[in-house]
Length: 260
Ligand SMILES: Nc1ncnc2c1ncn2[C@@H]1O[C@H](COP(=O)(O)OP(=O)(O)OP(=O)(O)O)[C@@H](O)[C@H]1O
Ligand SMILES: [Mg+2]
Image: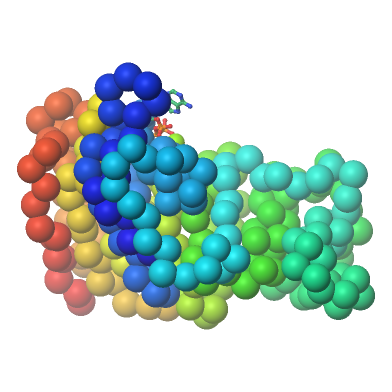
């Protein structure tokens, strides 16, 4: 997917101006930036939910290959976990029995064996998030677009859910664009991190390539020698953006951090 020179306004001064990023096949990409800078807006443009006044989005794959996960899961409260997961498959024309079976398989992959018949209100926040993930992943997306999907989870559950997601997207070679506030999460998960500058007229002010080897273990990734310097750099750059001293409109080339 390629987002090129996107400018977006909600009526007043442009929120985004000339924002560009790309997500290669099988690549894990994160988007970080100051609060209110336009991360969600940029993601909504990529999802086709918001129309920019300039620039373009080239998906390079059919819309049906895209999975979307927001912060709030959209589970139907009157349907069980299994029914929630099978719904999307049924919409795609899959026979009922097959869809239910596939739903069970995905719930099991996400550690929810035995919870298939529970209603969302009888599941914990982390379990509901896993059901929502199963719902999206069961449709076998090639590209997953996520806006702070793990923000509501506590630290331990969050790490476990994210580790499962990493394993699944690595195994299934799913490309990901993740919007997150969490710089540590962005670095430990991603191949590339983009920093959006302070808005209004936000654009991508920096691009960081991360070469921590895969498969990634979220905890071990943080022990990699390139991790701490990269976190410091990203933190300083983000702080500069928030204080208005950032790269702003003069985007630089990508920053490479040495592997091993
Ligand atoms: N529907 C809307 N109508 C008008 N202004 C909006 C709308 N949605 C967002 N904005 C404004 O656009 C700017 C960018 O918002 P956006 O939600 O994209 O930021 P964000 O980077 O995702 O912030 P956060 O990190 O807090 O989630 C903000 O100033 C916000 O107030
Ligand atoms: Mg947001």
